[in-house]
Image 1 (tube, rainbow, N blue to C red):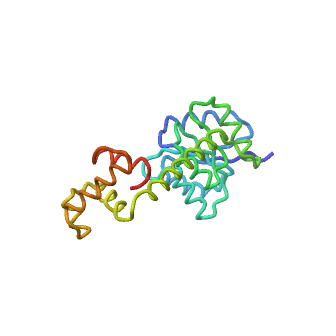
Image 2 (image 1 turned 135 degrees about the vertical axis):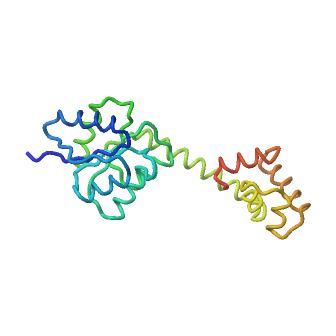
Image 3 (image 1 turned 120 degrees about the vertical axis):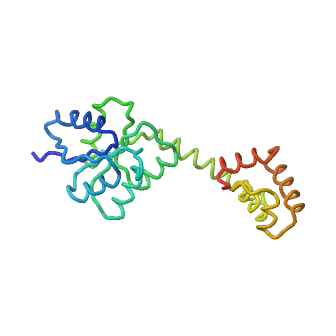
Length: 213
């Protein structure tokens, strides 16, 4: 029986050692390469064409999502399992968009990772559906709030919010927009009232949190 050929990618050698030992005890799985960076992971995909890539999400430089994007762009057929200690909603939805085959949290039992690789190799998906549903709900909520705020503010007010978030003072905003400093102050007053904030710091925090900038 042909063994499942896998590549391991993680920037921590001690983690790679542990993963290699874990899979080394499985008679139906063969580790054909290790990678300690995103670029090395892509090279391993191209060179070894494994059945499955077990990929750390958080790597310095090029992260796991970049590797997935490269694999998709280059038409590399290996199925990808993300292994991560933490994943936020934006990362999760991007991974799903890139057709991630499996997702395993590092806090889970190692045997689950082995089972995940087998399921993924067999053509199945191994995803935490409740995480995906929660991520989609939060994204929808953020999108609704962003739409509300962009409808609430005028185009000029949105410009001023974005310039304020860049760190420009009133005088600098006025010069950039070719208006008077007094006009900027009036716009800011209106913006504060519409968004329910009391000053510049709260404005920037709200604008950043809600995706206005």
